[in-house]
Length: 156
Image 1 (tube, rainbow, N blue to C red):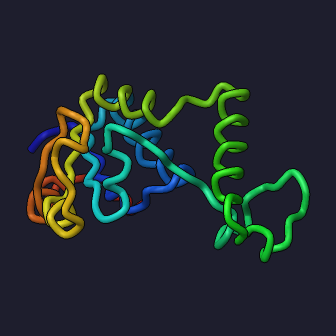
Image 2 (cartoon, rainbow, N blue to C red):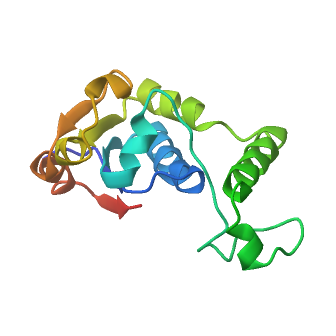
């Protein structure tokens, strides 16, 4: 039995705000010596695409800090999601927060294994050419081989 600790993460969300947790936790765990894997399924697959166009919305997220109170009916208007996403990206850049691409690259450098759910790729008719290189494709059984032996398993 190995003394190396293992972290397994399931990434299911593909929005800008939900993209940060799996990459931050995975890169940190790898830096601390954990053998780390992320299994990307359903909307989480968006985080593995070559061209990222991640958005954030305040709808359904009442905890999102807003510079001024905006009524929900205005938040649902066309263009608001793009505007809020742009504002969030600008704020992150101004505060020195790493981009998703940078965090993803950091995970690769730290040897975090990234697995794209083959069933979801097939379900949504994605092409492997849409995704970044150096990822693996597999199903739930592939993930469970690792997760079954992990010390920590997170669902994000």
